[in-house]
Length: 217
Image (cartoon, rainbow, N blue to C red; front, side, top):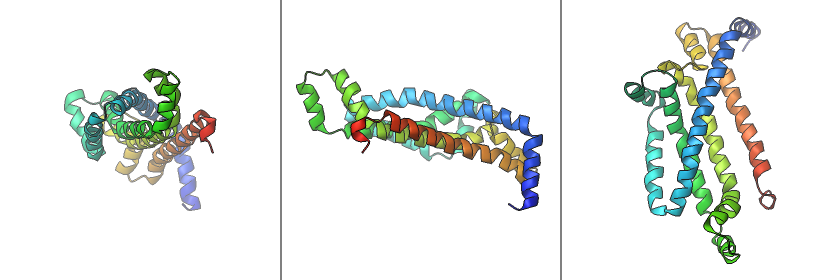
């Protein structure tokens, strides 16, 4: 970006600051509502299929199939069901978030050393105690990796929510593309990319703080 283009970009950010702030708030709402819903679905489901492994391939396969559908097409498929607006966007983003969280939760739990689990049973632990005190803490790095992947993916795909009337930073990108205004495109794209990087870093810090001390090395 040359000096003139950078100056134009700063002018665009200054004049469109209200639109950028509004789009940022909408983007955060769409992204993190979807992530929280996905967490409430995928983590319990991951625990369930780790206990009933014959269902694992079925549920992971379903979420993988949804992941292969092009994002914009998937938003379009949901419009006849939910109409336009945030409900359609959140539904699509939630479904896109499921696979990395579900797969990593399942992989993390089933990958816990069976010897450790047997030791827990030998100490008289119940199945619930083994899950909460052994399996979940030891599988946390895998789970957090899935959550980080899902978060970055969702923040990126949320820019397409503009095509179903749900707002977000994608509005600025679309307006910029429609008017051949590269500075307006950047005014939407740069905050979206910065959000993804920031929350990936934040979740990495949370992962380090939550990881049991014995596993940090």
